[in-house]
Image (cartoon, rainbow, N blue to C red; front, side, top):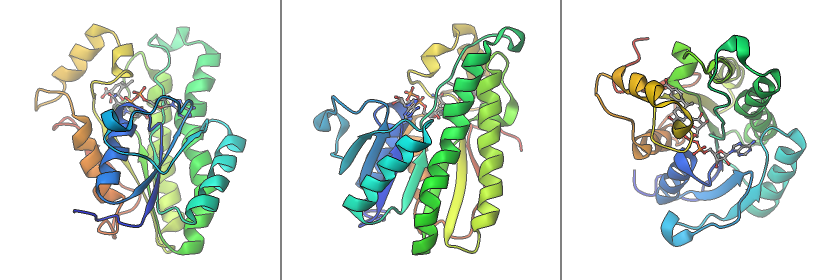
Length: 246
Ligand SMILES: NC(=O)c1ccc[n+]([C@@H]2O[C@H](COP(=O)([O-])OP(=O)(O)OC[C@H]3O[C@@H](n4cnc5c(N)ncnc54)[C@H](O)[C@@H]3O)[C@@H](O)[C@H]2O)c1
Ligand SMILES: CC(C)C1=CC=C(C(=O)O)[C@@H](O)[C@H]1O
């Protein structure tokens, strides 16, 4: 898979840290030029992060205007976008659904689900015009199982899975493939927002008995995001250590 993505341009949302950063680094090592979209893009450390993106843009995925403006600049500078990784996401409150603040619900859906739609809606016409594109949406095992006390997050991630399947069918003859991934828990800032009890319970559900590593996600995404993934679209690739049974 060395330099497998040479000459391609990839946008990674939420790429400043955590899973997004790991995916961006791995796509870069496969030869892709990386555009990072995140809420704040200052303080990039190319030594610590191991590479230099061609662009870093302050883009809020929950704002269509922000996404469209960012994308216009990418096309003006790069001329092409081959890969879109919709990774940006938040957890939201950890609370019973009957106590879930409605404003927080709206925010979780806006970032985790509508943000994916906005980025796809903006980038897909360009990919269709070029007759090539790979979109990888980062869902979660929570979107397949439904996880207690994070109902907004679980609903948004289930929505990402359904959106991916629907859009993939619409694009199946256009050279633009959409897939999503459903990772189990990874030790990032997002996981740290969960209660210790929830984290322990989540680990206990994983037959392999350990947390997922960012590099394992990045390796899988790099294959899905490339031309060797050619006959799979609308699929959910699990990273669950044996937890997922369907
Ligand atoms: N950590 C886990 O256990 C886990 C498991 C499964 C899926 N995921 C998913 O993986 C993705 C990344 O999670 P992570 O653990 O790396 O989280 P993280 O909090 O470490 O990183 C998320 C990144 O997204 C950015 N972001 C947040 N809102 C944004 C917005 N509106 N516009 C642009 N960027 C925004 C943040 O600034 C941050 O850089 C999320 O979609 C998350 O739901 C995480
Ligand atoms: C909120 C986030 C860290 C999260 C919660 C629950 C999960 C699970 O597997 O049950 C994780 O996948 C993760 O998305």
